[in-house]
Amino acid sequence: MQSPAARSSVARSGRIPVSPAATEEEREQALRDYKVTIEYKHLKSHAPGGVYLVPSLHDLRTFFGVIFVRRGPFTNGIFKFQLKLPPTYNDVNQHPKIIFTSSVFNPHVNPQTGELDIKSAYPKWDP
Image (cartoon, rainbow, N blue to C red; front, side, top):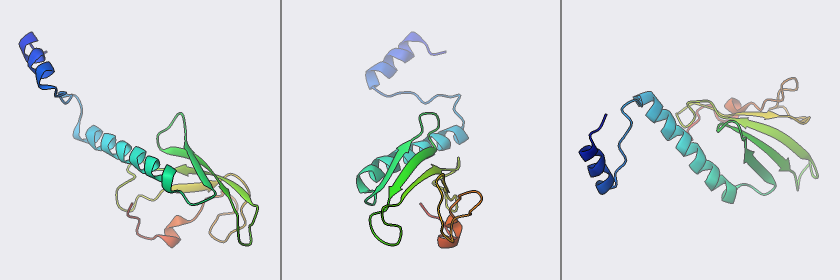
């Protein structure tokens, strides 16, 4: 426990002490989580037209999305999906998982599970 003098010097310096209970793994995970929030903020203003994504209220690494197709063979199509990020997302080769919850007829989407095969298009993932 810090002495009153030590607490006072922390307050004067304006620095927040790092919790001695936080492990290196916890700090790395907190940094990964922060990177996810930064990417989401960037995506909100740079998403392709017709693609909308909102975070889950219960899980930082789950997002719900919808695609409104405006051109091409699927014009006027509306496709709902979930985006799930692994706990170690932002590391190399930690692919996100995209699962369509509406029917999609596409050779890259598994017809039983609705999962998009990202690894065939991006064998080496580097966020």
